[in-house]
Length: 327
Image (tube, rainbow, N blue to C red):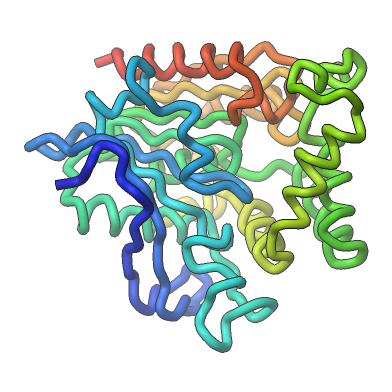
């Protein structure tokens, strides 16, 4: 029986075929669970991780009394390929480590997660696919890849297809990573991860910092310096290539893929997110049969969706409670 707060486990995928035609050798998917599956195996929530995050970074939305309550749901948190726990450049088999790591798409990640959820756990229905940032990309992909089995979808600060302006940002990050290194990436990221108003009003003081530099150095520079450069690059390429339209039979048409989603969907961009602005979400929600736009009114930028502050997290929790109550 799965425990209420299970420690991380490893699901062996063997030699895992990728959509590119390559094979990820001796692939593993590291995941954590919260709660217990019911007898019908239909109380399941899938909550994939974001860029550079792990299953531990998802706990801000999980707990007793919250929408994602382990007393009510069996919550599965699979780790993104490339993030350092599931198969990544830093731990891949010989010949695929480091710069030799193959491109892994969002759809590849979800295909592996579906094996875990449907085959290993024997799940019949997914009550909710939810995720933040790259986790949101995976939540969208879940709803496209398994429309008859995903009841609800809640992408938070993410998109179904990486927008052109987002690609320009990522290309800049890639050039910085390859040319100047991880610390420089952290400094660039700090300027994009939060809004101009956040810095103008010195909101970093609310987080316990006495100077802007101390905030940037600890929250961004140190975090990137502690990461593997090849892992960062692999995840970046996965993010850059995200497009639910690449799912068969849509031929690259993200709008058609979104229109195929049957799940009740609440899309939650943050008002000041510089990566995934609400304007992009408006265009995507227009294609959804049962979609709703619900903007997080926050000056925390992209961080609003990832547990950046209690008010934004409470807002997200309320929307998740609402969608889960919608039968």
